[in-house]
Amino acid sequence: MTYIWQKADWPRFTWDTEAVDQYAYTYALEASSLVGEVKHLSKAEKSDALIDLMVSEAVKTSQIEGEKFDREDVRSSIRNQLGLSATPENVRDPNANGVAALMISVRDHFAEPLTAERLCQWQDKIIVGRFERGKIDVGKWRTHPEPMQIVSGAYGKEKVHFEAPPSSQVPAEMIRFIAWFNGSQNMKGAARAGVAHLYFECIHPFSDGNGRVGRAISEIALSQELGHPVLMSLSTTIQERQQEYYDVLSRASLGGLDITEWLVWFTGLVLDSQRQAKEQIAYVISKARFWDAHADTLNARQSKVLSRMFREGPDGFKGGMSAQKYTKMTDCSKATATRDLAELLKMGAIRKLEGGGRSTRYDIQLPEG
Image 1 (cartoon, rainbow, N blue to C red):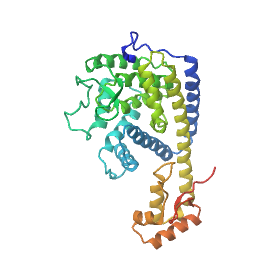
Image 2: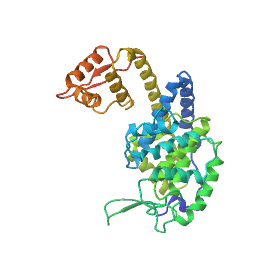
Image 3: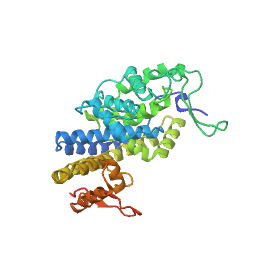
């Protein structure tokens, strides 16, 4: 089996420009339109929207790799690191601090040239706390002599899907990759992000964390074209199509240097991700209108519960809100919880969910328009 990095002309990628540019061009229009809409948000709303997208990206890029973080932990960590809280917010899982720091670094340093040092720092942020030092290479390119393979299947019946260049070749490959990335800013952002992601994943320079760092590089490429941090969560869309993502990436890494199929898929994904972000920002605007309409009529318990529900984002509070959950969240009696929920329903702040079973469940009722 011959891998793409073993081809004689590696890494001279080619693609059908017309096929790819139709998505890249439409994405650029969508991104520009979204920037125009965001300008009308207040400073607080802009901050809220940006943090929502950062939280989604952090949670989903980790979930793709089999790691689960609570949105609340990630949100609190981001707010703490940005200095947005008067007193530090509680972060129950300290490992959430690493991926939160990665999100902030990507946003803060997008305009700077990519360097080996920054890539290694990113990998260090997401690995610390997950492995004992010495078991894998952390904060540096991999050095292990054994092949770097992507495998699946039970022990003894493993299937090798891809083998990356030997560790001895990684330093030279990464010098070439970084030089290419920093010299390719004239490319359309979506296409450049796709080439960069495939190129980086084929090298697989780290012992672990390649997927998360690779997706961060794609975000950098998109942000550099715009001249500001991109307003989207690329990993949210990738996670929704995770198997398809792996399949297309696998075919590209095993194929020739014509990467048209991969780039058409990836630029289409970027476009869809931008459209999803537009919906998420619309949600932030609706949330602001909700508080404008109801803030003065809520008691402290109701405000606490609604704030907690909102932090779950557009997908809503998992399983809906029930009197039992309300009781636990506010430490009140069931009778008080039932009365509070009835008041929220009457004022139009929440709505009943269908199919709640024995207990009635509710979700937030956002204002229309």
